[in-house]
Length: 188
Image (tube, rainbow, N blue to C red; front, side, top):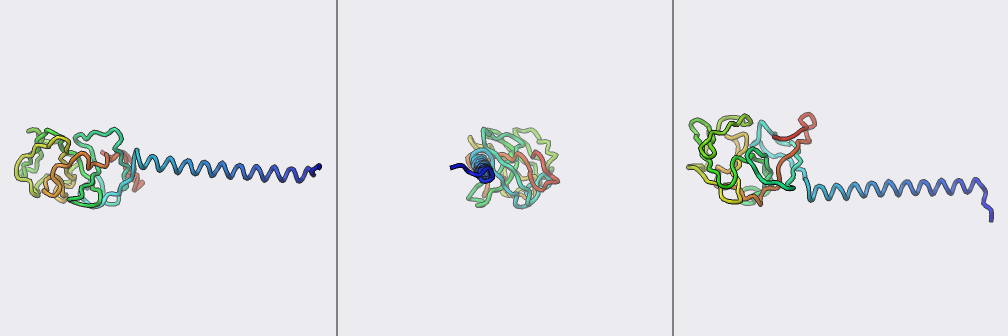
């Protein structure tokens, strides 16, 4: 049976539309699967809660965090979870790693690691609040000593409730601030 050319053209147009819709659906599903894999295994987003990292980070900042091939080092901003302190993730700066000794002169507001005063231009004010910190602490193997940049408004490794943090509690290192957009950029 011979079809009318007009009917054949309509069929081809309908098939073309269905093919394009399937192509779009495939692209959307692929993008969703890729996003899920990336945010499950490579990076995730965390919202900053509280003021312990002011002036570096503020409450509500949205961060991209990754643990992929990560080994903690001094100065890194990390997101960690320590159920004995808080159920939600917290954001702090690594001050010392395993084997290093931390001492703090609260009269002068200076933090020392292995006897050397730290140059800390990122802090909000000198470290004057001792929390439970009474004597030098040597960081155990597989742990880090963390502090907030807003030293006098931060509960961190100076406190017995946080103490030195096991590296396994580190969710990852903060890489980028993605919100608010006017502060978008690398976190340091």
